[in-house]
Length: 625
Image (cartoon, rainbow, N blue to C red; front, side):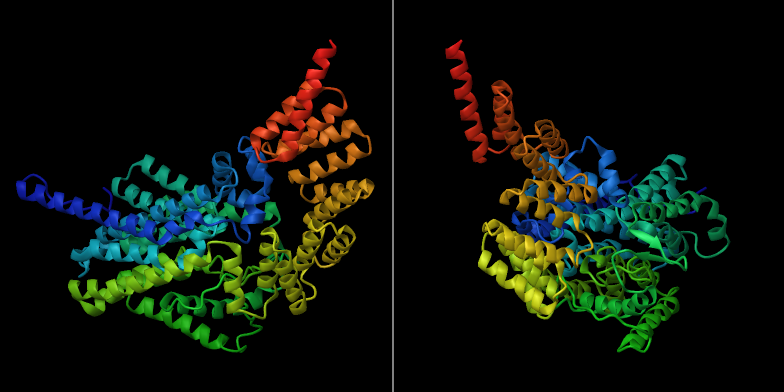
């Protein structure tokens, strides 16, 4: 017989029936509150645009435009395969209209908040919580924990920033797997264990933060289910399938080259010069900053100018380590007296460990990394408040004040995420001496056609960091749009001197040379761009255009068709194919291609002109006949 059985209220009497009805209605009300509050706080983000890495990971990620080719998506993003599939589905349904993407992010956040509510309820029903004094208030504390998770302003980056769906979706699978595991422990059925295992595996293909999920299962066993006695060790064979999933993420990341092994056999990221030791020391200060943000969420920003710690004695690093140790001591000390508080602390550090340990990440701190750890923080905080106040009405009143303050901060913070200009202006106010915010603001102004401001902020970025490649690229893009191709080319080439990802710069150079009329150089740089990014459809379009103007018709057609292969919604490539067909006297093909381009983008003027030309040529041919 299973050691974990839920304890439903009796329903064989009228009184029991009424109690069950009240309990069910209360749960329904709680879920309604979560959904309503989530829509109020995040509804405004449905009108937000794409910002920051959304441009690279979604707008310019052409592998997402072929959902019928999952192998291509896998090749480009194996460690976040399921997340990328959801983006591909978004593109299939909404193209590049941000509304659909933000709507999915909001739904995921609401679903995760509901699962947190159900998860905390399950914790209260576990055997080790049978004598807990707060058990009669289980639904109240579960709702408080889920509201804290839902409404805290630190969560905005994981929800309002589209590309961070990887974080929220991984959390959704993470909590789902735990709920299914609790169910399996309750029923003892193989099918239920299988569904828990499949949810665990799915989380592993969503984002690497899911690596800790098997350990979270073990933690739940020890704290809430079996206890840390003989039964705990007897259950080890049941965990083996879950523990085997730990191999998935390291294998995926090594295969993709995202993580490599250095000469000492230590895993490091390719994109950073920070050593594992420096990253470890820095993360102590980062965790202290995270705790500060959770307790008092002020001075939030998308881009932190965070100093790297070189040793235990650098700045406040030693103090940060002592603070972390103090939390661990507290958790072990109060473990038997208040399992919820201890569990919340354990959860926080466990789920943070993937991104705050010894494997360096270029950006040492990011607010979205608190999304999953927030569950532990929320449980610990609500359990602490309950233990201190020991009165349901006082708890409700105190928590309500906290919730109002958090909601106000979240609503205001979401305004910053409405567009890239607001976001990077806010980042500059927070850290006025860092180059990236100025460069990214320059990019956003360039996208908006405000070229003077784009030049101003890009040059400011180069004043702060003369080796910042993206700022050179921004200047090149502006000058190219202004028709100053020689100057643009010089800036692009300067950016190449400092860039670790030259493919996009090669593409920009190819386009500038093509517009300038130097088609041989355009072909040269386009071919180099394709070597670095073989799925980037615009490069094939440039290559086709250059070959067309060198009268290499077959190669031009081949590359236009490749552009369409990687981007079936590429109106320009269809239009170019139509124009080329017209040159060859194939006016019916010309009409078909150009009509397709016009269907894709009715505002694309070359397509309309192409259709008119094809129609007139076909009419002329008909009259001659």
